Image (cartoon, rainbow, N blue to C red; front, side, top):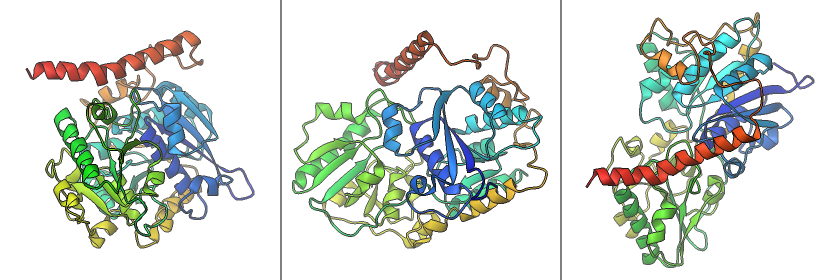
Length: 448
């Protein structure tokens, strides 16, 4: 491990969306070997490590505005294909690599990196995990992440579930490391603001139909009319044309144009932490913003209006004490979170958040100091254990069954020229137009 008198720790982060970039960059700051850090890790630790950012080219590649909104800076940042990234990892030296990707992307990179590093005597410590609440595809997502040196679990509950899955299939579970969500922080809620502020934190993919989204908007606007003395904010994730981790076919800012909200209702963008600084009541369906809010002891509600269902993700909050409906909120109900449930979610309202990443840092320090370097990456899925599944995952990233680059993969030896960049932007715009405009029309026609 680099000491205080030697070169700083070099950390690379590969992310495929704005949300995962936020998670990956903040995680990198939290787990960089050294003393524990408080709520503003990048500023405090800037002299201790160098952060290189890689954005995986695709439908959700963050825009400049989205990157700025995250509020995390990097010493270098570039957009890459999978093949370009693997080439960079073969040629450049890093101490730690954070894979902030969807499960299939993590699995492809693990195999690609194993092949890229096959002749090297040393390699970085590879870290991966989840951006937020894990409420679906638990086994699938976990096994796709198996093979990383550290698989981060955001809570005690997740750590127990992760180990149970790995042990249940006979896979090594030692990589599972309990931490917390890296973007928690901010001042503890100290009492009502003037004006009293209600924030509804939306999600790009939940709910996924116009009827339910219009219903939620209508109830939020109705709440604003019932309480004209309050400020009611609709906290949006992205502007029209931008994409986040999940596809948003029906942006709320377009739906609200057909309604007539009162003067105390408005749309807001920006960093969630800054919005929470002025929030008196956080309302959501199942957003990770609920955990950010609970961490700061802000009154938090997870809506039951559309039911408590796995497809919505609000089933994760059963037992939290936060479940309530708009009717209850309109009548003045304020939830009281269950302290035991909150403690199991890694929210750390008891002041232990500052040490939540100590175990991960200690593990990384030991791995970096391991005599003879680290063993080759060893994912659970191989051509022998999953011959009908793994090749397809690797092929989507132009990799063969052994992790090598397939013939005909996109060129990785030069930066794209002006024409290529224009074509890429046009293709991405056409895709987003299809998702947000054409697909909903086709769906409606199919329902006739």
